[in-house]
Length: 487
Image (tube, rainbow, N blue to C red; front, side, top):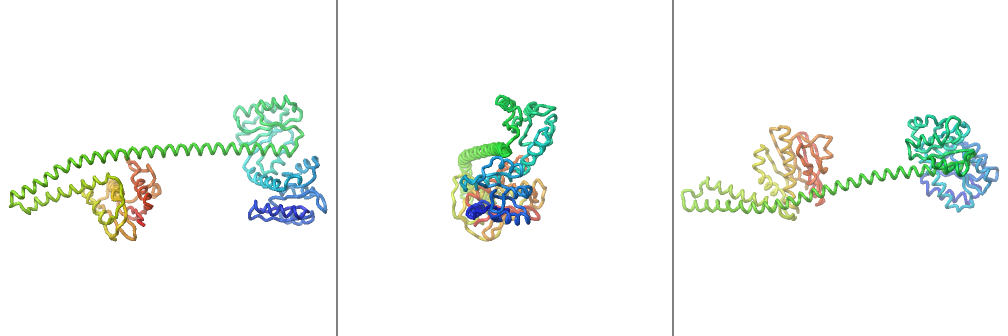
């Protein structure tokens, strides 16, 4: 950004420079203390902003405005209070005008606001409806200097069609037009558009009653012709700021509605999780009772076997009896594992490899039934972890592999679990996950299964994050790889 300050007072010039440097970082600020110095700068380059005094040692600032106002955004900062001169300079291209009688700090903030508004104005469209070519062109020139996108039309007969082609943020309508009255034009607009601001203009219908009539019939404001250019700019920018606030409010409301909807969804999810947890708690209590009932006949079978061996010495150390006894003990152990799975979660120091073997032993029949070979290898490490959470994680991963094996009808089914470099690496050859959904698999309620819940991998991630651990997915040639960082 380039700024030129034209001011013969060194103290004011330097103060302006220092203050603007704070507001506009990385800007280039040039200082001129006379018309001659200013022309030297302006002949070589254009500026984003020019601040000029009118009364300079070697001439009037009007010369700068008349010659260079077309290509540079010029703001006047002067002690001159001549109202007619002020209005004339606005017609020549000045975009704002401030008096030195105001506190300089205040004036600087207003200059910065004006520049920032100029950048925003580029995004707003203004439609001018006026049969006078002079008025249309003058208003257009003023508004274009202030960076607005402007369209002019000489009649309001086809106003609705024009507004469909040109989405206006503000409409300026002359009341006195030969073919159609401005009030009729405003009424046409209001039949289809209740919100776009309209400024009415008139050179004769400017009595209090007539102005009230216009305001009651759809106009938002009124300007009398011949109009004061500075007042027109102020009114236009006020409406544009209101339009921006209105648009922003609508946007914020939509964002709030979306946030509320999301929060409601999250609350429902939490409620669903609580219901599931409640069901699991009840299931745990029921399972406790069932296991107690199961263990009684198992213990009775074991006692009967021991009694049978005592009463029939020839069957002592019989492979048949030993096999039955071993199966009963194994069943007792599996029942115990399932019982502990529903008990309260507690961390403990566990040997990871041993626990993995125990987990696969628990579901040995499931693995055999699905022709899956599980290989566990790697480092022999101990970690602080909850056994039930580890079971939950492995059950989810193994069940997902089983589903994939079945869906893709894979015959040779292998799962490899490795422990290395403080990582638990789970791999299968079940064909992998499609690339386009790999980044969604840990999201809540995301599933590709017909009757899936979409909470399996999501809960795995949640369990691990609770212990400040993470899980990542990597595709491999034959299937999937999940890496759990145990650090």
